[in-house]
Amino acid sequence: MSDLLYSEEEEALRSAVRDLLADHCDAPGVIARTESDAPHDLAAWKALADGMGLAGLLVPEAQGGQGATHREVAVVLEELGRAVAPVPYLTSAVVATEALLACGTEDLLAELASGRKIGALAVALHVTAGGAYQVVRHEDGALHGELTGIADAAAADVLLVPADDGGLYAVDASRAVVTPQVSLDLTRPLATVTLNGAPGRLLGDAEPAVRRALRSGAGLLASEQLGVADWALTETVRYLKERKQFNRPVGGFQALKHRLAQLWLEVVNLRAAARNAADALAGGASEKEAAVAVAVAQAYAASVAVHAAEEALQLHAGIGMTWEHPIHLYLKRAKADSIAYGTAGAHRAALAELVDLQAP
View (cartoon, rainbow, N blue to C red):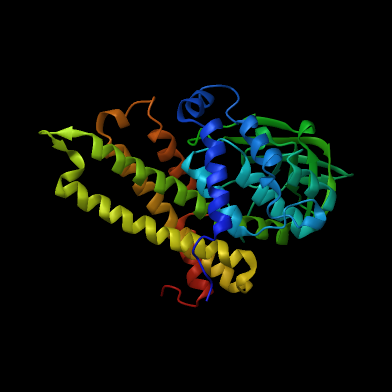
């Protein structure tokens, strides 16, 4: 039986990441970035990747990383979710890194692990593990085509591009045309990547690398969604204790107590599912067990994160509707995450197939 509780080391990591984000990703600063042409906070990214070495948690020490596990990465993502931090951690330190680990590309792994480069897997954010994805044309050693819905492509230094010959290619982002797309989540912008004869370095087979990357991305996304939901619950409880009507705290009203109690139960259950997925990905389970754990977590996480953000918005009343309050960032992140790496419905369908309980 796996221990899903947080270890002392994981709690220490959480405390350090939270302190760093308090200095770099305060709510007014994040909101200001969403209004600018540079939504990514590269100073916060540098502090996380270079200062704390967190970009290489999944990379073995022999390849320039920290040699940690998905459990530690999950703790980091919880805190990034709590801060809706506009950094490419999930896309570079998890998804792109997992794709490179599948291909065994040591030099690029070391660069991503050190934070010297930011990577992005050029697969649309909504694609689930094992799902169909766009590819570009490989011809005479060059890549041609257009890929849409690529998360954090604007911040990437290297793009990992699947091609029609079945290969996964590393492309210098400066050789691609990256065009921003309208994105609901302003802290994780999407872009269209256009390649017009860009040279690419063959890394390995695309299909197993993409599947591994997207599965890990989906499993660890649940921890980010947990962070979003936990922040929404904590801040709403705090606000309702302070806000008064009829000369008594609003939080003392029975109807609101019931809503918060229900939300607390959902968040606790999400924590269990997210921790189980992270633990399974960390190597404590077989490939099928890990796939089941990821599907269970993602089948549940989206609705909880969205519900928590919606309750926070409603229970903050008028102040919650203002642009200056950060709740809208959390609601948009929760909504965008609900379709990232597969919808809840797609994961339920995958779960049904994995456990052989498909609908009639």
